Length: 615
Image (tube, rainbow, N blue to C red):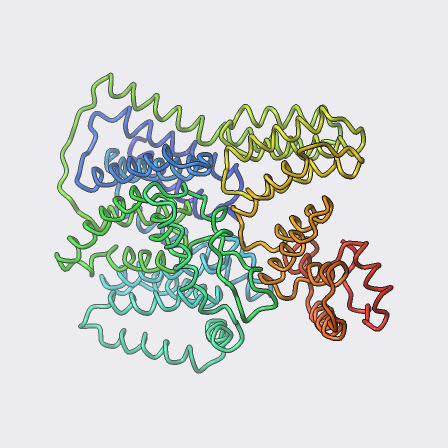
């Protein structure tokens, strides 16, 4: 019975992590944590010995370094969740041998599990299901990367001798690489496939080379994706610019970094213009698309130190010429993919990469007998980790969903307050509370309600100082005094102060500039208003509202013909686009009702058949 438990606990965790659909719900992470707790309880608290090795020491040191990043950077809720996943995955890998489990069998189980995802993906594609979003991953590219990993592992199994079952799995996973349309997965599979094949297997090398050539001759999803990137996608080569943006973020927030998981909040301040698209700043890089730059930008000096530990470990293993080890090509393949995507911190890849890395780095180990005090400390640590990293966020998310679906203001606010108590480091409950108070004020106007809404917005801003959203919402709250004819001394400076913070967080956002122009104009600062509108138009030359605002209130001599031509071109572009309401481009090509009415009345020659709806 004990031997069976030794094999099944890790298999259950791997199955949960790999086979769970979508992989973004709080239930997914909570289930992983509870399964991990059972395994770790047995491994650290029941077994008589704990295995200590160079790999476990290095991994533990890397985790401690990233803990330093969590303690020193803002926006700590996201960082805490990242760190909890890393700690649990690291403990699972470190404790694997404590239960005398079969490592070889565990590797095969992981390959079988990945093969199931590959088979489902191929079947769904053959059935005509759209590839995006995928069944197991929202991004189908990640499925391709995972299937490519299984291909490499199966090649290492087949080196030991012919096995029809492994050949079938190889074909299934290779088909999933093509079904995912992932260029990076295909390139990585081919390159590291050559490393996996012994020099004596010349027929295998010839077969892989033939497959590579046929990929660029015979129509297939990968071929189509390559051609689309080279000929049609104007942003195919923007990844290098995203990496440059990541470096600028890392330099700006050195030495502590932005905090794990915070790059998306910081990126708007460091965006780059996209000159080939319909707008210049409508695409914001929410991810670094490179895990090494992610560690640098988000963890600063702590991330650099953790990377050095990884580099030293991999370099020492390569010096030993062990690339043909069962897990060698697979580890290098994952490290290669991490250079192109953010995947190592995703739970399936985190667990797989750490396990394969531990399997590849065969460091000497010793046995330690834990004292009762150490067992108690480990049990307490594990308990607190599960509670604060998984159970409380799960319950908080449940209350947030209940608040969003609750029509009664009191009940919704109680749910949101409960979420704030359960996760005091998260800004989302305070943003929801601010939204609830704001909507209640629309039904029953009250200065006290608005004051409460502003208080929660300020709390959210302190918890995530990178976001421009909270400052913009606070400015809109203050503007309600203008709408209700309740102007008071200092109101303009309060609103502008909020917009200053928003502009500092997103200096390349033209809507913030236009917002400032409206406020300046409202308080009779015409020159400042015109300057802000021109700054918005300089950021986005097709910004319809800014162009109409300047023409209406600050017209230049003999500018009407050019104005009509430019507005007509913008409206024609709008007609060709299928724009989602609320999106960047929708807002860029839309007009407030008052400006739309003025434009229609002043320039009847402009065709409004393509004009945007009133926003």
